[in-house]
Image (cartoon, rainbow, N blue to C red; front, side):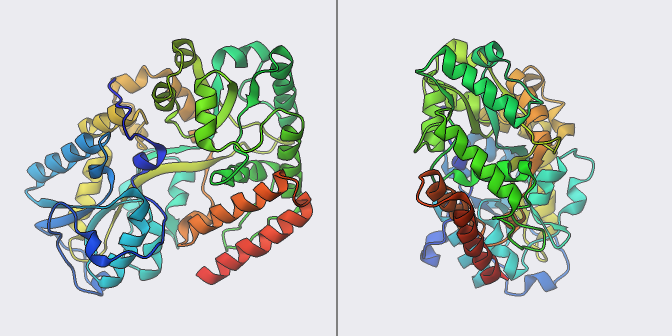
Length: 435
């Protein structure tokens, strides 16, 4: 399998972003002249179109451009339509989509990065029917479902799970199905075996401390309910963050570790475990990991509390379609991208991540032989859970707030209960401002 290292990152693969900085509308021009639709297109019946736009950043990324260009070319040839790319940088996705949506010129298909900014505009088509029979985990579908409508069809579907150095994990009995107490005891064994190792390179600083969410879920907190009420500060979340901080206080995790730091620590053999998306093998190679680490990397289900379920924050990417004019053609394009085996194989070969559709993934021979992806799918992806705020326009701000609030607690600037109470107020304010 050929996986280019250059510019392949989690955010590049997701093909979108959440930045909301101001940016000129004229900057939306891509490498082709986009088609246009008048305001109020959602009031129209779904129609076909000879030209649709494709909004996203992947065609501007060296690693993924060949696969996406192949999808566009293949669909265009089969359907006899033109797909006009509208390319923007990763970190401008939400801004570009918001500006184009407000202008009334959004028409076609877009990559999912920043899709939430479009939900208040009621521009997106319901893709529920397209997901039927594909075997996509419900937890991932929930990430893209609002008011009973599936607004993004996932092309990749997974979660943020615990990756392990297989040799070290085996030596101390780290495996799926552990309780948090058993997990902490195993981390202590790693520390006792080699004091120079970081047993668990958990994220302990922003921008990735939203990782605290799946631990709060595991301890029994909803964090945010489906009706957008924040529960942070409840007994379960206090127990979760108290436990998470105890790992750091005991030297089982380390202060000031971002995801990018954890990847380097894990690849260099200085950390035994860390949290990441299923791109772990790619990051190992990119960061020069020794072959024995690459060969033995694995994943475990997140440790549980008192028999409760194991959860991982849902992670993935997909495509949305604008409703009304051109919707029929856009839906056909999305179906092609999601179900064509050759297209899915090309994306897998460029990204090393399995397709969301199990019915398609099962037809890719190389994936069947990919031990890590197979383990990650069963131990992590099947336990993926959507956050209620994944579907709102302020999702990025809420993630940042949670990370910042937990960071102050880990730094000892405030006690757990007081810190979470303040965080609850901040998160609820963001949710209320979005209503």
